[in-house]
Image (tube, rainbow, N blue to C red; front, side):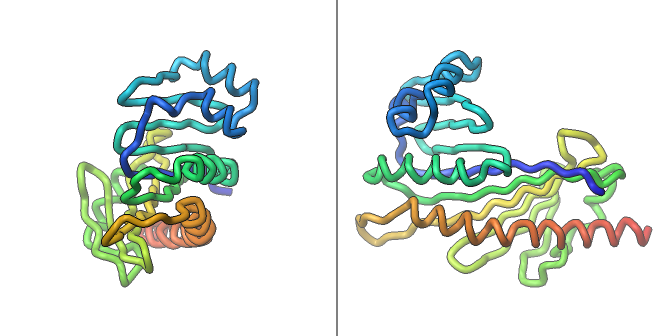
Length: 219
C-alpha cells in the first residue's frame, strides 16, 4: 500500500487585527481547552503583536497578519479546523473579507525521484481537459482551473519529506465580490466549500497520480 500524508488549511483574506488573536481569546470563544490554552502560551511558536499573531494547540496552528488569517491542521482534524474558522469569523462578522481559500496538501510516496518526473508533464493538463496547461515555476509544476464559484490552483513538486515523495497542493480560491457593502455568513460559505471540495480533492489527487504513474511505467 502506498504511504501518504496530508494537511489541511483554511485561509481568509481581509482586513485583520492580529493583536486580538490570542490563545486567551480563542479560549473565551470555547475553541480551545484550558489545557490547550496553557500549552499554547508555552509553545515556542507563540507570538502576539500588532502586525502578527501565531500559536499552536494540539494539531491546530493559527497564524494571523494584517492581511490574512489561516488555520492549519492534519487532515484527520478537518472538522475541528472548520469549526475553529467558522466560529472565529462568526465572532468577527464585521471584518471586511475579500476572499477565502480551502487547501488540501497531499504527500505521497512514489518510490522514484520526483524531480525527474515533472519535466515530462509540462504542457499537459494532468488528466483535466478543461484545465489550463501546466507550466514549471521554480521547479514546481502548476496548473489552474476555473470551477463554479471558485478557482482551483494546483502545485505539484517534490515533497520535503523525501526526494521520492510527491507533494500535490490544491488551493480552492473563493473570491467574495460585492458592488457595495453587504453582510454575509462567511461560516456558512466555508462549511459548504469544505464539504464540496473535501469530496473533490481526493478524486483529483487520484487522477493526477494515475497520469504520473502511467507516464512512469511507460518509460
